[in-house]
Length: 100
Figure 1 (cartoon, helix red, strand yellow):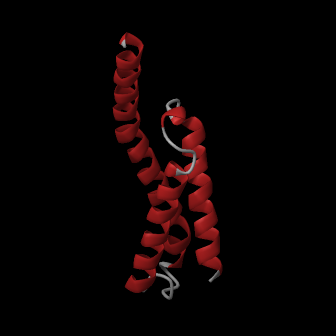
Figure 2 (cartoon, rainbow, N blue to C red; figure 1 turned 90 degrees about the vertical axis):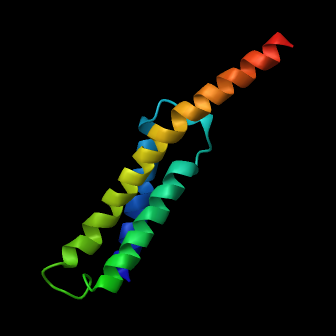
């Protein structure tokens, strides 16, 4: 249970770090990247527990380390895909409104 709490908080913290490092963070909500990092981290934690990594002494460290890393990869991937698309759409909408 402790590993669940620690990995959830670490995944959430990594999501906020990615949000802080993203220069397009004003284009989408403040909880999008941390929320996606948390979801990715928790799903990976569940899958690792179901695979038996939490009860194996040699693989127990994966349950602590891998979910925040997967959460960071998910948040960075979302920022790289969603950021430019939202920026282009917002710019087009702003130009349309200003021309009216």
